[in-house]
Amino acid sequence: MSPELTLDGVTKSFGDDGAVRDVSLGIASGEHVAVVGPSGTGKTTLLRLVSGAIQPDSGRVLLDGEPVVGDAVALAYQGETLVGRRTALANVLAGRLGALPWWRGLVEPLAPVDPDPALSLLDRVGLAEKADARVSSLSAGQRQRVALARALVQDAPIVLADEPTANLDPSTTATVLDVLEESVGDGTLVTVLHDVRLARERYDRVVGLADGQVCFDRPATAVTDALLDELFGPDMDAAKATTESPSVTAPRSTVAETPSAVAQTTNDDDGTSPEERPPWHV
Ligand SMILES: Nc1ncnc2c1ncn2[C@@H]1O[C@H](COP(=O)(O)OP(=O)(O)OP(=O)(O)O)[C@@H](O)[C@H]1O
Image 1 (cartoon, rainbow, N blue to C red):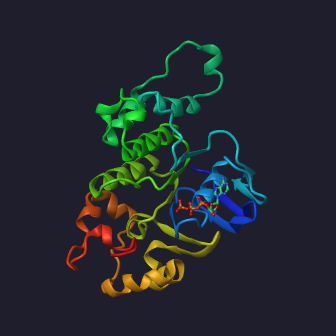
Image 2: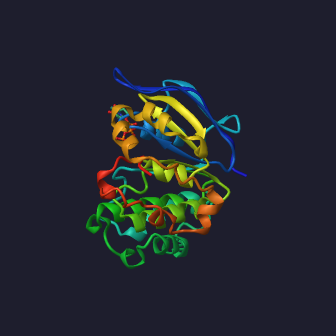
């Protein structure tokens, strides 16, 4: 069982900018939650607060009622947090070190870390042949997948993923989200996604952030175009013109049985390429 995650009136500012403002959320053990919202509305800051990477100015982040400590939370960052001159495998193994009990370093200081879990994850995200490549030689999408593997190899009960599908093509996006869902399994998953369609299709629950505050917090099946309109503002008008049928909102268990669902649900009938459409287009 993953611990229950609670954000209680969490606020974080950078200078005069209130990045996250009085956010309260309860995320139950095993929930898979997507966080969506326009750029600069505090999504990354929220994940960093939950991971303990930064501390709130006020409010509390709690796991089962206690402050976040230890290795309970793994965060796959959106940004460049890998060591470029080390190999992909070495970077993923660095995550594995954090998953081992502290006393292993005392008892077996020279024992090598078992590379198999890291190699297996690199294989599952499609990077088996890049295991020995320096991270600095990898594309942005490949680095994104190394960062995800590094988070997943920690076997943490709560996994946070910040835009894990940025820079990826549709097929690799589906693979990465499949690996994420399968690896986390019954654990708790909080993923920041720009693609609202994926959030609706693949997650139990969607939280919309606007200007650092919760705009909506609904089961994925209850996320309507009106809510997205409120969240994303005027740009939603373009989406309304092309969104006449209801969203494809398969529950998580169904999607997991159809790994290619993302590619299959892409609608090319309106004459626009997927890249030209707003992220919530269905
Ligand atoms: N370390 C920092 N120092 C100063 N300002 C910051 C810092 N981190 C975030 N901010 C500011 O906080 C606000 C929220 O940033 P954040 O990265 O959380 O947004 P976001 O919703 O994740 O954006 P995006 O979707 O573009 O990644 C922005 O105005 C940003 O400039």
